Length: 420
Image 1 (cartoon, rainbow, N blue to C red):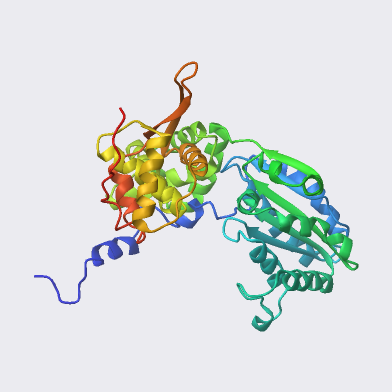
Image 2 (image 1 turned 180 degrees about the vertical axis):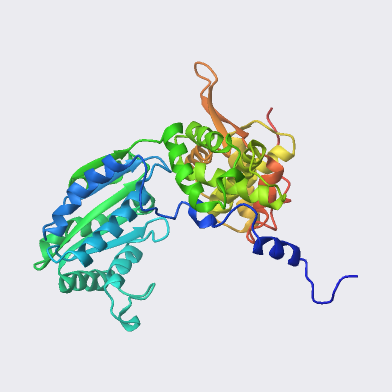
């Protein structure tokens, strides 16, 4: 007989109160910054040699850090921040340094970035710049005055800086790279972090020159380096190393090395494999759990990418999905645009131009959601893209139906006449 006070969650909570394998999964998450970063000593020393100038009270060069996802760029930047603060607190000879970190994927507007920097120096909640509402010149003046009052050197880390540049004209970078001309008692230095080596092509020449005074490239980890990272984290995260089959860490490392040496991917594989083993009440994490984790992560990432798409990209994807579910698995750009246009009209949303939709098709192709292959029809026949789904259209439709704006059009039937 079921007791009145029991719930559906009780068996899982009881199991979690007595974890079998994982002691602390925080150590297997990318946001954890360890005291030692394996195989990044040389790059850390290179960055430290540049930033040591700030500890002498002088402005260090602006730095651009390039590298693929999971190569340790963010971890090294945050690690250096901890070291800077520790040096300032423990060494009377070190000059004052303000070290700020901003993720431009989260704060992606000129107003937001400038306000975040200014609010770092706010002493009370009343001094906080609101999320919106102030004129830009007032925000910038407040930032400049607070940096000036703080004195010393202010190092501003702009992570995922390309995300901001792609959404704007890069005005904030112009202001920040020129602010030293307006300061008397303080200095500002910028560290930009990106996984897109071409994002600077969007910047004005004068901003590009000042921003990239020093360029540092983070290479991908190889399988052996990833193994060292996972071994260090596993000691912290698991109760006993015997809980891991000897082949688990090499397998996680090999799978991640195949995908551009992504340490985040390797950590996620090990963490999810451990969680799956715990849910099965298994006494050990095995290769089978790693392969199950790989499939789960790929599905979760795919779904999250679709959920985070802008509205018009979602409608465009829905256009392709609906045609696939109708049996049309190969589509031209023109056919896709016709369905997209119908869906926009049905949803009472202003459609984008076909040229802009062509750009969005390329973006979906880069994300791996679709494949768009350029096909030539011979001399005088022109060229078009042949578009196919790379993921399950049924699963994609299910994810898109979670959006309130799209829920009423996911069952739309196109009126266009098929040409093929």
